[in-house]
Length: 301
Length: 281
Image (cartoon, rainbow over all chains, first blue to last red):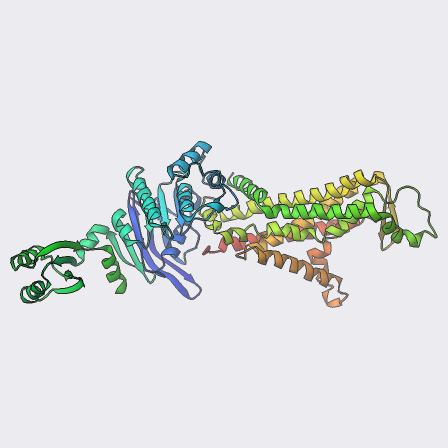
């Protein structure tokens, strides 16, 4: 069942067409990657999804119901972080959560707020003013605010922006917990393509305000050409073998004895067998079929 | 229900912001300064006013009393209190925009109109508290310091002496009309707040409108005569009419209607603007 359906969404700011024609759907239980280069219209689309911006055209449905006509009901079942979570700095973390809990559309007890503070690892700091929080702590508080009313759909717009590697891993693990333990549906916009590759099962790529491709992450990656990174002890023999036996392949030297090979067809087995036979001294073969390559290919078109 | 819950939130935010106490603190300080000055040198101040009547009238009793001090304070401060109020009310929507919390607020299941109305109710309560505080300090503290007595009012018709027994309802009505005027200012700055991304603009704009309208109101130029009766600043001093004898009831009602109409129109503009606004910050 599709929990989010976006059909032919468009948004103009005066004569500027920020979003021209974006369509996608997010199924129940998906961790859905929402990708696009800067200026593609991602943030505008997400703001339309959360009724921060009124679309010029198109339709948005949550749980099979029009967002426009059922705004309050829909938002009761949605939690979100838009870019960086901003809080009332002059209030404590607990007081901030109390404020947002009061208008979440659900009855949330102080105990539930404390449990959420514990869940995101801010216990002991709940009485501190947010003005003294680091970016990572604010991000965790933002996630607590997002989950406080136990939403069915969670929308995270660049949740790892500005976080250090430790913070990125924490957010990633938290999303994985939401997916695995709480079976939440997550729409995740991120520039961390490796992140999406690890945690998303479906994705859409938009560019210049239009949907480029949508589908299952692994199926989409399977369709693209296979790349290999091969490290050899004898580069001269390796280069001769490639030129003689696999003239259609291009081997690009990446580092001493390490080559990047792009192939249209999957000829890994005969290639490796031949390299071993000719005595190249194969030290490592790493398959490279990354979302990063796919993303660049899609957005360069 | 959601409106009520968010109103509690808005009152909580006002109560925990330092800027909310700047207004109350400044108001308290100003009144205390006036009280101190009157205590120290009030007799010569009053003597300066009554000197022209001393040839024809003899004054018995205590002229410099709490009622007179309260009347003087209200006249002096009603011009400055709008600035203190707009410090808070001008920040209500624009402050959320500046801090980014507007994104969090507008993605909750409360309607945009609900957000505006809850802020407006909170602004109204804050204005009411400021007015009551103004009344309490100017009336009760002044009476405690200077005692009580009849009120001598100097107006364009001459000198009017209002008996002490006839003053309680007049002060209550005057404060109510003053509250209406300040409520109009609070709604005006909230309206400006819906158009701005930080609180400086709404505060400066509110004060600019008050100054501009006040200047237009005092200019004796016929071209402005048609609009003067409809400018809210013309009616901000309507509370003074309560201290006339007989008091001009129809003029007071006219002022009340014009101030309430301003509040309604300004609130309507705020609602339309905020409902149509794309939140891109």
